Image (cartoon, rainbow, N blue to C red):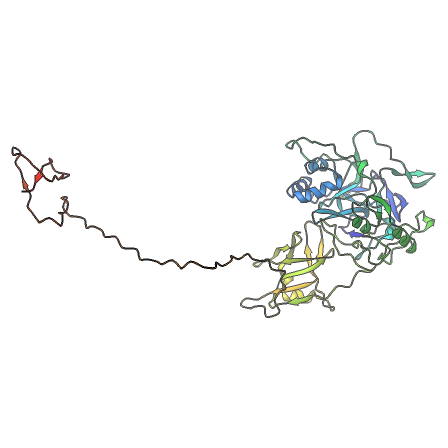
Length: 516
């Protein structure tokens, strides 16, 4: 389970501690509970920009729309039904990361203060900063999952909230807040959310949806799903997704028996919970076998090799998982960083993210804050001063692990740089170490030689053309094979028998010339 952190909220902007009913180690609340959310973060929740970003990437748009069972053409219409708000309590959801052309689900806990989109029923549907699609959590106890990373200081498992499914609601039974079966009674009129004002802490009414102008779009060709139809326990599409999310099988929302057994053995607390976290007890109304609320668990399992969820304190992930799963309950020990090459500036580096190796390249002529080119396609920025030799040495711990903080898209993810590091050579220098490993070479197609090749062509010298000299006189030159004979003018009255006629342009009149 992944725990995604966010900024702190004022003390008066928080969900009351006694709100909700104990359930699965945490507490279940109605999505329309007053004060469950606060007024939205206008800087992080730009609905129009989110719609344009998705529509510009067909692959990501198809994966995003598939989570809600709609077509990509209906994305702007569906986003127009959502409302941007801020969580006032740590909330358990099913998050998704975009990889290999599909949305990969994982269980996550979003920290109080995270900006999200909710539907008319108050169910979180997307993360504002990263556009991650969200779904209701799995129907499994939190105690059967494993936490990864360091939880935030205010994290308590039994305080983690989840929105009740569509077929249940929280109500008061004989003076006790209880989760009972059955859908809540619909409110009359247009859907309205009662949220806390971010500045004053007072309740205000916030109309649901309607933040986009859809006048220029083609008409909607399919009905949008209702909030109730999407507010069901998470069910995985594949067996691998079911195993990673602690479910018994694909298309089955029931929890895996190993997850329920682990929750009972660990007293309802997930593996990796902080020492300050206390297990739920039957005296206070919580289920001892249920997992503690507020923690995120990744892919639970009875065996230590089951996937884990990211630890609390990390930032809400965009289309990525903020950490790789660990094979044991405790976070794995980092591998010492391997440096190679010469020079005073890091030119490229690699790190592990969600079990996959990601390589990033630093721009050649970068100053100040630069954008890295990473293999996973996620834009990351870093200050060039952090890549200089003195800063790298200062950020390397005694165990040889170099830590580098990267800034992702608007609070999406913060990564620590670990792995193989390659220094960029200084001016006039060169790499004198072993060459960088290369992947398999692509075969080149070559032309087959001829058995009897033709002889090379002979280059003959082109004869030069002779130019006839221009005669200075308008009369044409005389023929060479004739003797030079003077030409006489014949009188006009004389009979003319001419063997040769000549025409003189520019003369007053044409005269016949004869040879005698």
